[in-house]
Length: 125
Image (cartoon, rainbow, N blue to C red; front, side):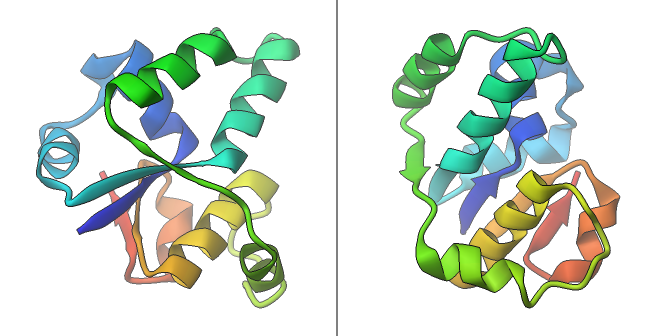
């Protein structure tokens, strides 16, 4: 199973591991491939710069390499897919992550139950 981490799951894995449930940790351990979207790095950078998140982007990038996570760039196909999504969720970062998961046929690992109506690819933990 290929898993795209949503931004909160990535942050918790790197900084607050105790917030990840047992099933979430099992999915991370058993995944065939783990992916981090450029959108998540962008979101962390923005939230850090405005004081809504306590992270250092360089540290996040180093940890991504250390944990053997794969980068998922944002493509035109991902951006185009956003227009097809219903407005179950208005957060632009989450909508882009959903679009990427659907386009790539990756599971999206998230704690946000508002994302579940988009696809069976969404794994809420």
